[in-house]
Image (cartoon, rainbow, N blue to C red; front, top):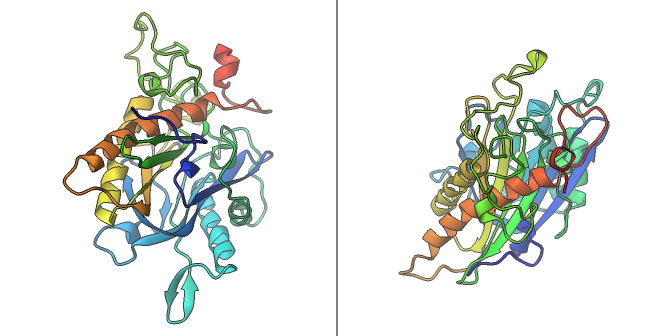
Length: 341
């Protein structure tokens, strides 16, 4: 039997902290996951329109194995500046890969498109994401807010506001898995027009309402819902969406196995959002291993981790939508506004 960790957050994985910074006028923000010690890192991209920084470095054949932090940001390509803010925060603390006596913090990043969400994007000559990144790193802690905070501040999905979600699970073998997701998908997290989440079979307790599955399959279950289909001025375009996420564990993994964990976590996207991995999404998953616990040899422990990576990611995605809150000039309602408690 598996259960959520103490906080039901990715920070239940020992050695990780998360900080959020956002601007309500801008309707955008940054989430930084800071590693207490450099962690094994990998990434897998399955969306057709990703926006990233330092992801080639995470390939298994490349030499740098560990990251000091991972950044998820709004702002489309402008949001890649957020990693510079986190990097500056780390450098001020003498963190980073030592190269010839210099410290270079390793901070891979990914962005989502939230430029068209009702926020004021008239920021002047330079976007604010570097400063938001620094602030997010400064706020990193074991407890953090879900919903419209950090990278989830201005996130939306097909017909509902999105947000930032997280969940965790402790396996029967004592390993901890955690997921963090900024959900800004072109697809829908809901089953047809119902109030039921696609992720319902994996819900732990009442973390996103406790509604379970509908008694009768919704008649329009197969209808494809796309965020901007019926909004003529906001036609979907490449890069205009994206769910960006992190899967983390205290199990000791190499880069290749960490990437396999990220691949498995993408199954959680498919179980929580329909459709996912579209040409207009930049869907990707980073994976982190804090290497606190060795995997037992000759067991199926890693297969179990991969399976649970899918379910914990699905739960994090549903929580992101469930925890969204209303704000002025929203283009879409929140789950609670549309369906109530």
